[in-house]
Image (cartoon, one colour):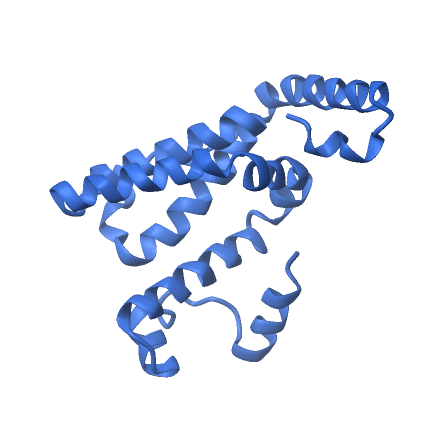
Length: 176
């Protein structure tokens, strides 16, 4: 999951927000400002996934993959609503907060509280690259393992029973 991130860190070092700016990426890569910020957003998101978020990403990999494969429409609906708001009213921290909340809700719906925590971080670490002044207006990314464990275990057991019933044990991780 993090092979390319490790390779990148070997080449250019660990992430330093003072150096890793849109302007620095634009100059170093010779790309447009938009492309530089998109790359930087992926860079910081990848750093979270392969750094502070790594254990949660690995522990919940199949649920997160399930969201990407089978419920991507829910994530895209968040993005569409966010883009529509920006087109109508311009960018605001409130619009970013609503987008973050939408993402939290999608991931919580399919992966429980830990999914909401991961979804929140996936949005916020990237979004704050271009809008650090919004940090205090965004939802707090927090996890509640105590509430998530029984829910997650019931879901996992139900998926395994259904897979066994259908004689298809390999697909248990894809069932939500």
